[in-house]
Image 1 (cartoon, rainbow, N blue to C red):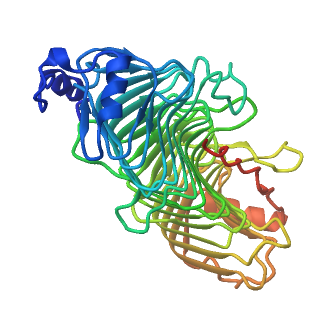
Image 2: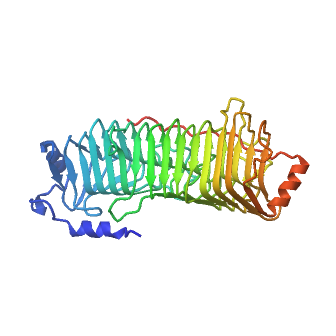
Image 3: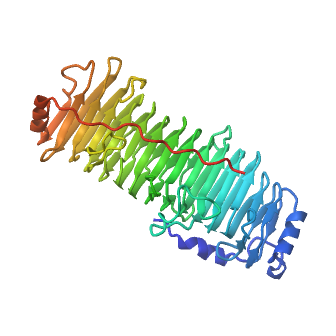
Length: 468
């Protein structure tokens, strides 16, 4: 595990490194810092002293602000404007930023921005806001908001920047053409924001570990860990845990909507009272996904979404469903184990008296929904409280492929059921191995000609407001 204390230790050791000016001459108050910025030209650095500087500052194009390290050089805003307002090509490194309101860092305009080795603490407002950039690189950053499990329900939904810290990172139209462009995060920890840890709109996000000591974590945010509206996001070795629900709104740890593409590799989602990975009219592709300890579904897809849950994925100990796919175009689950999904109220399920705890739940609820294609290949379904796999509403153009599916359970747990189907071969479940109580339970259920209640589509979240 990376050691989070190395950042502060190295920063304190490097107080006088890399600058020819004596420490006593480095800017340590607002007037001298502002004067140094005004005199700086593109391609130069403004180096700050080991001190606290209060004020708000505009950083010219191509200029990099360099502090003496996190916890050594501290910038404290006044809440009226961004602490650092970056012009295209500007950068920041080696500072702590305290945000009483507005933004910690705001970056606007076509160009590349680089922010590294920073800590941003937000009372109210937004830690980092980015708009219209081709590249915004953020590395070795610890971003912290005011939300905790103790106060998460004391603030209205979704929360206003004037009253609390709303977003850790908010990006609009950050979408370069090359593979190395867009919003690029590495060694970034985001915790404690009221609306979302990270939210992107019409942007490209690449998030993967770098060589720094920090973890890649979205943790303890209220409402959403990550929101992706349009554009795309790729996460590798990121941990997203502890997402808190807002009053009247369940938490959604990872969200993709409005045509977005969300790809994850070896990503962990855990320990929240809402949903794990949520797709609305979006494409999701997940390999080595681990989801555990959620109050609602581990993975949810709806409204013409396309979903792939791939090799090495484990979904366990969550509520309602391991994978729920409602009115989707395609769902493919391969090389995955789904276990111990416990019952909870069916989301948007009519009268609300029914409960579900399904390993896989595929339903077609709207006549306008597309014909669905379902693939389950090398899937293990174990101990899911209501049923291992429920396949509902298949019409004549739907396709179903089941291979090497095993389902086991105890007590009254069902194995695999297809219901309300127009055309499905009588041997549709020939490659489903039922074990334990599921074999007898499925046979008895078929004789009763019962129909299990299914979920409907739930209200998707709204996109964040346009960044100023």
